[in-house]
Length: 62
Figure 1 (cartoon, rainbow, N blue to C red):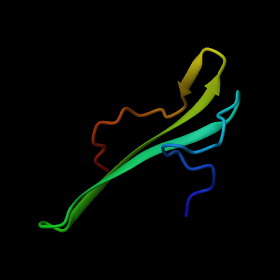
Figure 2 (cartoon, rainbow, N blue to C red):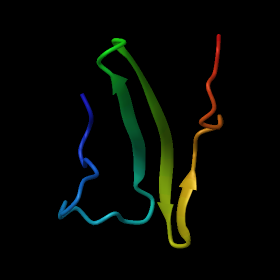
Figure 3 (cartoon, rainbow, N blue to C red):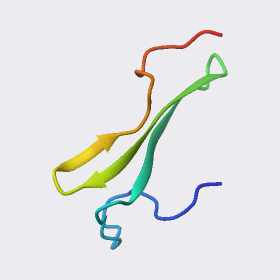
Figure 4 (cartoon, rainbow, N blue to C red):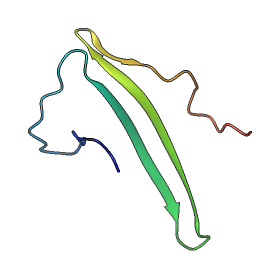
């Protein structure tokens, strides 16, 4: 369900300038059967990653 490249230890893929990456994690609590996910998009630049996401990682309630 994710497009490569995936970010993980020892991945041989080199992150190059202008690549866009989606960094996310899933937190799950099996005892209460709840889960949440946080995610942000970044573009790789010569000076380092630049966040493209417009919202902070605080909880958004709709």
